[in-house]
Each structure stands twice: as C-alpha cells, then as structure tokens.
Length: 202
Image (cartoon, rainbow, N blue to C red):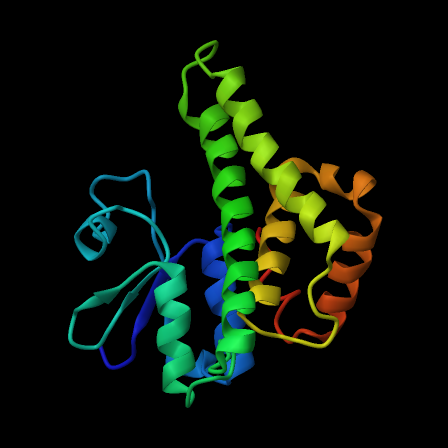
C-alpha cells in the first residue's frame, strides 16, 4: 500500500465529510477510498478501528487514524494547517463548536436509522427515537436562528452541510419545511463547494 486508504461507505455522512475535506484541500488523488461494512464481523474494519466505526484512515505503515474529526485534522495538517480548521483561537473554537453541532446531528440521525434497521419488528423504542429526534430538531433550530458562514468552507460548514445532506437522504428532507433559511443556506453552500454534489450519499 503506497497511499493512505480511507475506509468508508457511500452513505456515511462522516465519510462524506472527509471526502469533501480532501477535495477542498486538493488531496483527493493522494488517498484511496475502500468500502467498509460496519455490520460484517469478518470485515477488517474491526481490526483497523476497535469500535468498528467509519471512517478509518489506514496509513501506509498499516496504522490507523479515526474518527472523522481526527482524520480531518490530519489532512488539514498535511495541507499546511489552518486551511479548514482555523489556527487563531478567536475563530478556531467557534468553528469546532459548529462542527460539533453538525456531528451531533449526524450521530442522532444515524442512531435513528439504526433503531429502525437493527431491531426486530416491534422492538424499536419510540422513546429512544423521540430523544434522538429532539437532538436533531434542537440542532436545526439553532442553525436556523444563526446560519453558518455564507463564505466559509471550513470544518464547521462542511460538517453541517453533510448533516443536512444525510437528513435529506435518510429522512426524505422532512427538515426542510420548518427551516427555510437553512434550506437556502445549504443550496448556496452546494453551489460554491467543490465536490458536494459528487459526494452525495447513494
């Protein structure tokens, strides 16, 4: 293996975040992307990341970096630093906080997905689903009230956009009706972000 390998899946919003970062940093051609099956105990993913989660970056020496937050910071460092994650504390911590909000929405959406996908019929918990839905709705309400930057293409904007894209993909865009300002922001982000359409989940 001469190039690092990003193990992910076409539907993973966390994997999409890294693919977008690679495109924005001009590093896409320096990384191979290989499919990983989180549900298959025979997949080597569980040796590469003991948690069995994606994405995982497998380096040329066989060592691994995870999760998406660390992988993104690794590539930002390779590109010279301060490209997607600001170095100045005045902008760094707001950017990372925005990214944490986007990550949290994705986490809750994935938990909703797994609740319906992994449980036997009749065993899914409506209370659990409501708890995750509440996290998503509160996150969306916060974003609707204070939209991400209209010019930035940093870690925060990337993560939020991937979260919204995943809600579109898995939940038929139901969030859009109640969040028109955020819908407009995402449309403008998609128009100015290289690779956003190409990395859409499928």
